[in-house]
Image (cartoon, rainbow, N blue to C red):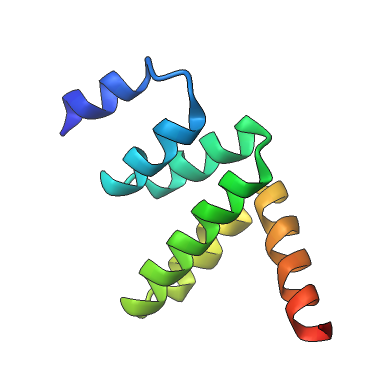
Length: 87
């Protein structure tokens, strides 16, 4: 698995790298990569993947900890939640 992570360092397309990082369980790195890409759809994809995974495992504290580590991801999640509440 470490070899897979090392090989992912050479993947230049974030849309390919993020799902693989999530499959390997490297959530924090996946979120950082998604945010760094500037692709809001990819950030949302990562956020909701983490949310579903953490909610099923009753690890919502881990979800919020990961989310709060990335300011842009936090802002997008808040924006999404506000839109859902007021729609």
